[in-house]
Length: 258
Image (tube, rainbow, N blue to C red; front, side, top):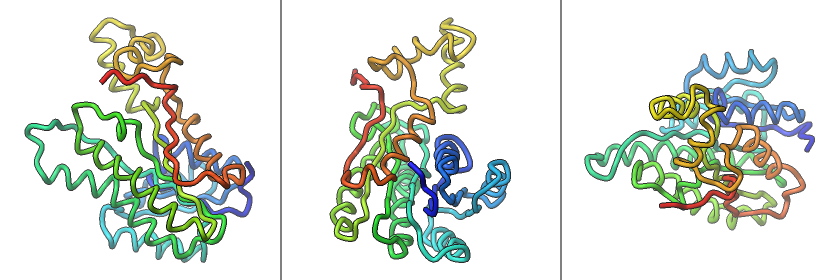
């Protein structure tokens, strides 16, 4: 799992799971490129990490992705590993959701990855890796946020297609689909619910109840960011050289109650 000499670009890497992925690659001696939407965020992240190259740009636009590529090329002529982590959910239900909400979600969660792939694939050499980050909701969606789950579902389809396109170049493409991840945002959101229901005053106290009601799985807890990052690193490593076009679910064996 040593990535010495490998150039790794992680989108949306200034916070949450993306930041943990960046940290984990850095620990394994990868040369990381940390992307954020806003310039200052990636610069602060790189400063905090003590290593890496900051990149920024709005991946929901063609110009934004082209800018990221241009800035990357100032530092390197080729990319080894692309992790399309950037994305985000927004609230909404079937009724009352405008078409613009669906389009915005597709721009954020699908076309951002498409743009990055189209821009960076030409400078990816044999042995390269494309790893997309999805969600188990893309195959087991709930009744809320249909725009988000539909956009993420498209990642599975394009992952399979790209794997067929680039396999002959010895470049693999895979999708990692986590369940709930214990990020600061998740803890804050569900702890507020837990306190209102009397499940506990800390996330650790309330976790079993939170899992039972919102993310049931046989292991009985929520994934850590590191557990997702470790799967990404495995897929990026030579040990996963014959894994291609797959949707790897990291959900503790979640039970589908929908």
